[in-house]
Length: 277
Image (cartoon, rainbow, N blue to C red; front, side, top):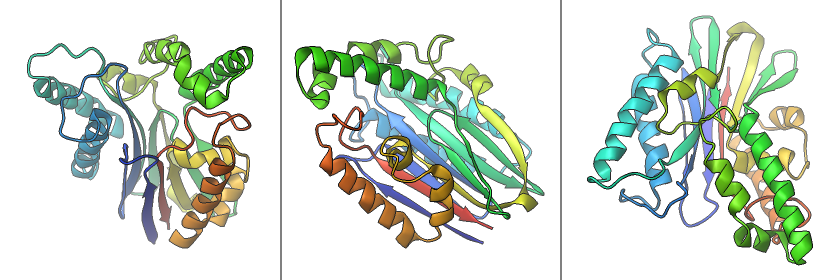
């Protein structure tokens, strides 16, 4: 058995959190609220939010008498109370949020739980690979990319500037957080767990598991440098993870105005969890 984590900040702070051990692993990708409210002592409340979840999951995932869904639901209730306390009586206009992708080894099975766009990649012992990832947030982002590209073309400006100049579509999309016409994510809505991808894979079939935040998965989702099924077979060490990250970094630098490979910022926090039986 071999496992490790990797994370790189996209700015001066990192809103991703990750962890892996003998029996489970997870990736969290925090997102700040739309409003300029800040109640924590972290760089952003999104960082506080994902950090809280990291500590909570490390403490509670070992309890296999409870399902991951039950653990996450209780966590949403608890963190909502905690964040409300931090606000010190001020009305919280919009809670910070986070993706969550988890795997847990329980007896002869691997359980998985996924909310948001942090994919879980599995490689079987026969070298077959497949991905588990929610698509609602990904679809919303793709639509917003098209809207902003159209605005950029009409205004004859670079995509990266259009993203800042015309934030309406993204803001409107974020307002549909945890709603039928939007997407489901960790925030302050316990029933979001009902919309997670939840399943079980027989442990004896699997050789390797990798979880990525969308900042790292850009290497195949945005830049198409390598297919996800190829990526998991090529990553076997921390050196491999760093090598692919270095390539991603260079690709991002070559397209700093985001005109060729559409994305909302030059780079995002990039995180990966590796687990091999």
